[in-house]
Image (cartoon, rainbow, N blue to C red; front, side, top):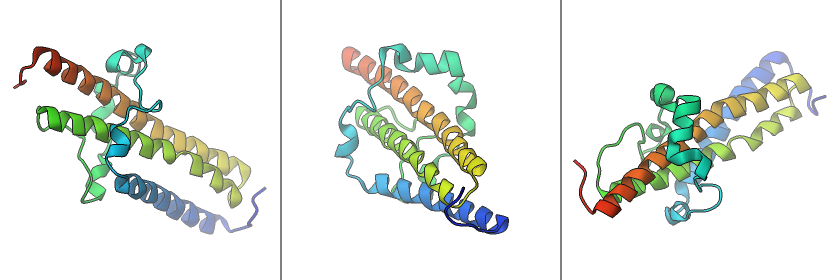
Length: 167
């Protein structure tokens, strides 16, 4: 039972506006965090051995086949770092790209919990749809960031051990 009773049209408008504000607000929040926040290899960002540096996501979820259809949210903000494709192979660029995958992952983790606020004005069934939406929208992007980070990690390790520039 929602706390606030609203018409269906008003609920729909409120849901759209709320999701827009949540996505943009969380994105702006993480974009304004200092880069050093994301250079640390905290527990959230640590690639697990079972992820096989992105290999698990490639084999089990076929990320390499659908990653191209995911829009790059960086284009929404001037300061955003575009992660659609690898533009350079310098160590500095690869480390920055890796750091930005952490920022993107945190952004999408933070976009999920606000889904429970929708129970305040939505019927219970619609509140659960909002939670499902939050998971279905954000989990693929989280997986994509972890997949990319594993691949970047492999390249950085290769560059470090071989001490050569890839072309």
